[in-house]
Picture 1 (cartoon, rainbow, N blue to C red):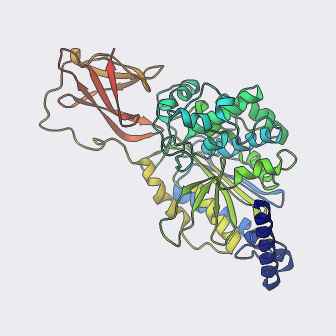
Picture 2 (picture 1 turned 135 degrees about the horizontal axis):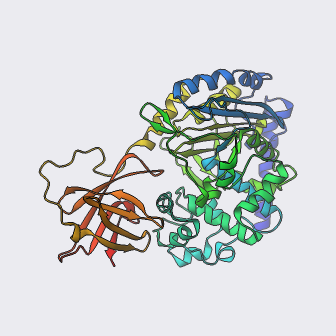
Picture 3 (picture 1 turned 30 degrees about the vertical axis):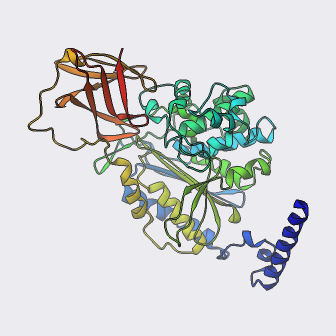
Length: 522
């Protein structure tokens, strides 16, 4: 019965397609496509070339408006790299120019690249997107055993596991390594499985590590063996040490006031599959050509297609005329205003990297934009302006202004006392003997409150990071935080509690695990 129903549906859909094609005013080449692949707006001959011809102007204008020190851009079309150019400087205080071969930290562009590593292993039969994590990485678990039992590589690559947004990133900020973070993920609360979406670097990293384990090598070695070496991507790596060893590398610049400064160098090895790749624009062009060629000679189309197909809602519409956004396995998937499928992703380190790519499979067209500055919307604006120009022949809005407004939220300090003056009539702080000592938490580990000159300091992390404490009001102290997930100006409270001669607990506002973390004296 089911087979008969399926056959009737197939015949009916075929008939609808035949009628639609017969009535279609489209050119014969477009009439050969099923309705679901028919673009809403045709692209005239020469329009893409005209868009490429304006790229120098687009990039130069957005670089000037944004103040981003250095940008590299590459465009691929028809299986060829048709544009590759560098703009600006590798570092603001040095004369070295950006070139198409300058190596940048990619941040979250690592996710789609890593997804193609997984797709290669799917092609080889080592794993599938439906491989269970308990079979690949038996020690990895979530807080619900029933979900752990079902959890797959695909669940983690599409951010639908139920893990909270950016789960584990706080431990990375404190210096914990990959193994420790993945082991402690089981302590995180969960949203509904497979019906919720929350972007999680370390959830995806766990899936990648599981695939690497099944392949008998580290993730970094697998990335080399399965993808980079076969494609000849000689300036790309999943290792931070390789990035630092490149002579021609872009120095990251953080946002500082109205400009940028080279203040940090982030080491993202702990989340390498999610954010630790580095590459040049030239190498990224090679990768984009492979994806647009349905995996080329490297990846089977049926192994790649699930990654570039919608697997979860990443952004639900808030009005009837708003297009939804979807996430595949490591790829953003959407529809542009002209009705064409767009595959894309952005990468962002507020410590100094902003990256973006967009692929339009129906036109065999792609653009990648790499910058050596904290994300302010420059990379996305360049990509969006080019794509709009290529698809519609015109740029209809200020793309940088729009994206820059969205990115401003990245830099808002966190903590309810951030930006607030110290209380003028504060209650006296407890004595050092009351606060000092070691405290433990199952997720954040052991911290210490220790003497620091005439005051106290919080020591946290495996190689203790030092946070000077300042009296706020009575048993509440505060300390400044400045990290990837705590923008400049962030400030956390620490609340000591206990009726004896020493505090029994301390609650830290910005150490969050299902609410502010409460540490117990040990």
